[in-house]
Length: 122
Image (tube, rainbow, N blue to C red):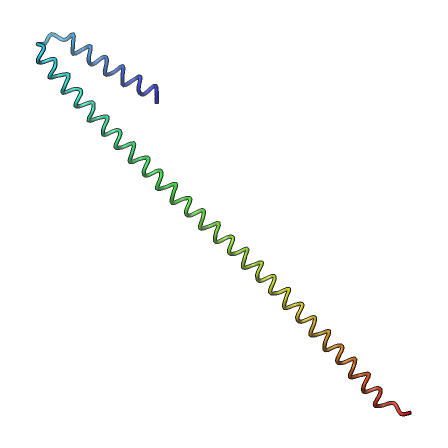
């Protein structure tokens, strides 16, 4: 940034010295200086506007990318959450199944014992 400013300062200084030493009347020189100053300030305003526009575009791009990455992260978190919930549900279902199997086995064993007792003749 400093080198650009130094470069522009050198150009403006050179133009001013060239105009001041040119063989013209004072009024012509002043008018020429005013015209050049207006032209240069217009150029600087255009460059400033372009720079501001580029910064705005860069900001919008960055904002869009951040939003995309945030959405991707949310989607991935939801996938992991759903998977964990599914695994928890599967573990609960397995536990319930095993409990039912154990209950049925106990009932079957009790029924067999009752049947043995009924079949035994004393």
